[in-house]
Image 1 (cartoon, rainbow, N blue to C red):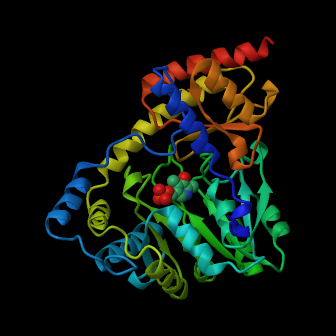
Image 2 (image 1 turned 90 degrees about the vertical axis):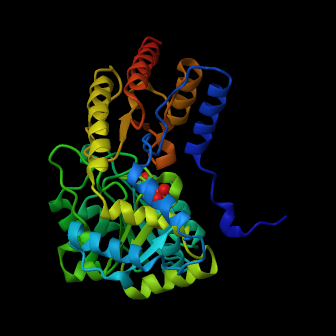
Length: 390
Ligand SMILES: *Cc1c(COP(=O)(O)O)cnc(C)c1O
């Protein structure tokens, strides 16, 4: 069978491959410590589950509008106005099957063949593949620990060509956990406006931030940047709702209408009763989010200290999300080899940085219990020491 050319360049997800191997080892009865999770390890809060169950019992089981339940779109617009200072109305918001779906549909609606999309590396691994699937060209801009893995305004400006359509900003960032400061966001916004490109701000981790760090939505910085901003958000990470498949996209009405048309011919509405869970998430108390955030904060502290106490590996302190991005270049191993050997010799699963465009690092998720963290860090320490003594 001859597959479409656009598919030829898209590899299967590397993170899923490592996760599958770890799972298989677990099934064999091996005691695997996994730091590969890209999702919170908590149950969805009870009031959210209850709202979805009630909706199911109330017969919310039919087709709904392709753009989402009006009440949910309204609740999302309210949230964006109140929490993020973004002047959106219901017509600026579409409910999607998750943040991933938001971004993919947005690319389909915006990108023409050959359009360039600027992606700072390390990046969330689906960004470049989505751009390629939409027949666009990912333009990867490498960053490193010296700038805390942040793209500078100079780098952004230098990457822009007449073909540039879009810049992808992800703060808090997966895989690094870094959060851009308000001043840094402002400087990037100035370049976006000056060069008249679009920016999509992936804010899926906005509520998982630590210490006194602030999350700022780039679109809140004035009318000119607001008009060029698209917001991608969702419920998966903050509310521990990964399996619900619920996200949203917010932006100019023309774009939201285009994405609505795409959805009307592809997925139709997002699961109707699940949307009622999302309404409860937005309208209910945020104590549940805060409790999860505090648990993440504790784990982050322990894991950050343990890793930086190991000779030969290091990472910057992340301000958000639930990942540590650890430099392993001193061990002399490339990321994939490091991860494979670590999994085979110590039964510790981590994700190779090459999946995120940075081969000298690995990603560790602390969306796992404290016992596993302590045990896994002991093993990682042993592993790196064994490499050092070779
Ligand atoms: C998890 C994640 C998403 C979206 O996840 P969904 O489950 O599709 O809502 C988007 N961006 C980043 C960076 C993520 O880590």
